[in-house]
Amino acid sequence: DQQVKQNSPSLSVQEGRISILNCDYTNSMFDYFLWYKKYPAEGPTFLISISSIKDKNEDGRFTVFLNKSAKHLSLHIVPSQPGDSAVYFCAASYRQGGSEKLVFGKGTKLTVNP
Amino acid sequence: DTGVSQDPRHKITKRGQNVTFRCDPISEHNRLYWYRQTLGQGPEFLTYFQNEAQLEKSRLLSDRFSAERPKGSFSTLEIQRTEQGDSAMYLCASSWGGGVYEQYFGPGTRLTVT
Image (cartoon, rainbow over all chains, first blue to last red; front, side, top):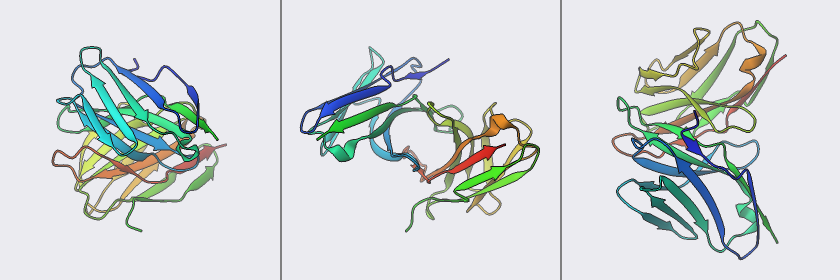
């Protein structure tokens, strides 16, 4: 079963506008959430994270919001730039036995049009 | 460059052959992870080391797979008797641990089994 879900396979926005990428999770044991960006033929690059004790974390143009009651998080990119075009993965940290392994969604491909 | 490195970047092998991949983590990181990514999916956890100890293995890691981290530095992932279903991107990541959850990924090794 998919514990981390990204229901939108793709998203297209205009340069300068806001990009909102969504992620839902089912396991209430998750205690840390991360967003990664991936370009073709490269490994995922860490972008931003949030602890389950917070509801918002901001880093420059990137903000992550967490709604624990809805088991939902979102990544906001403002303003969007063409260089942001990539696949974005939502990941959750699952502290079982102290492993801190990450559980990933399937990704959302963001295209920012000039 | 002090990022995570992986070697080789690409490997083509015939079914039934053995292959070995290497990962060099960020030098001060004591935790090392292996993930596998197939087309249209997010990375899936395979196994995890803290220093030289292998602390967790996914059920995805069949007995044909073995991973080592002999001196707590680099790691190798070996696949014996490869099958076409093993074709995937194999990603290595490392982290500092100690409550820091961000994992930093290498560029991956693309395996194609013919």
